[in-house]
Image (cartoon, rainbow, N blue to C red; front, side):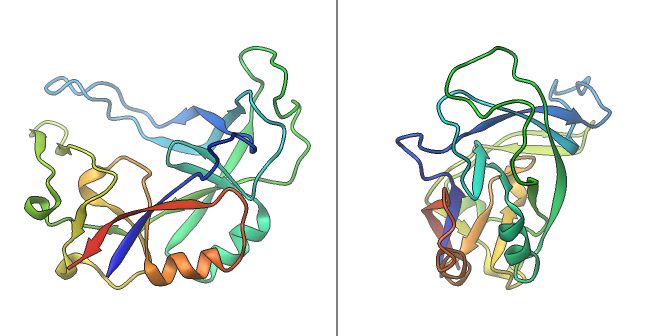
Length: 198
């Protein structure tokens, strides 16, 4: 079964994108491996990037997505996810062609996929970069495509994140999940073929 990585589909930048600037959980740098133990947490603080004033149904910062209310309603009844609160903060600088601040558009909801699955690491061609005994985190190389989800570690859910890629927000869907979302005609929703479940 094929799987697909969700991402923006806007090479012409018709839709506004954002940067997430907080909020972060308590934590710091691990004294052994030096990686941050902080996690992005609610409320998700975002500011709009220059390039467009048009909001899509999905807005993106890398693999982090915020969505409009009708997208939230669709996802809540079909996928293993929750929605965090989102706060739009002032931009660092004043730009032309940027969503105006203060933000007066529809409420935005941070899409958080809660289902985690494991890879077949060898077949996926990823390798462990670090296994830290102090913060109990293993770090793997990230691949956008060519990954293999271990069928024994998949619960049958149509949407998930990959345990080996944590804390990345990269979210994957099965063919069935992709088709369900695509049929809704949401704007600024895209995907690439990422691999398969076997």
